[in-house]
Amino acid sequence: MKKSFKHIKDSAVSINELMLPSHSNFSGKIHGGYILSLMDQIAFACASKHAGCYCVTASVNKVDFLNPVEVGELLTLKASINYTGKTSMVIGLRVESENIISGEKKHCNSSYFTMVAKDKNGKGVLIPGIILTNNDEVRRFVRSIEIQKNAKKGNLLFNENTFKIENYLTLLENHNTKVVL
Image (cartoon, rainbow, N blue to C red):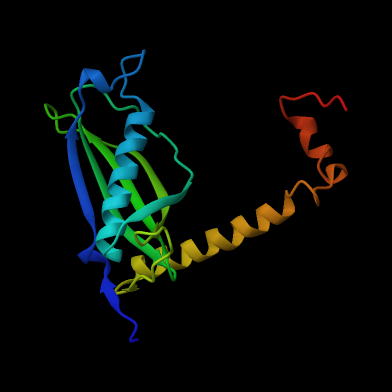
């Protein structure tokens, strides 16, 4: 079987949604959980469009809420493929809000969702690779490789069976904690 490849732009997706009072939390800002739900939806759409089949969220790498989103603002979510493996892909997401009266835009967050292509029986499906056409696309692909390597290292380093507490007790001295063992 010949390996197939797709351009990143062919599966890129963006959505706009007006933020309503029903999306707000107790402080009157848009609830972070609602924004995460939209992020998951657009990551699914981008991944499924690329893979040509159903995809599931395997992990989410760090979501920092940089600026609050206000009721009445227009939220724009953009998603594109950053990395492809055999059955998985990393989807890069960017979220911006816009005050539709003043036109002021704010970067709200960026995140990376790892999505896995599945068949109707839940088995992994081989996906097309991506065609990298510029420095940013290469940088994003390589960054995904490095993030995966560091995650594996961190998982090994902090595994409950191999973690050495004595190596880290001095690190805790300057933090807001009290160790009582």
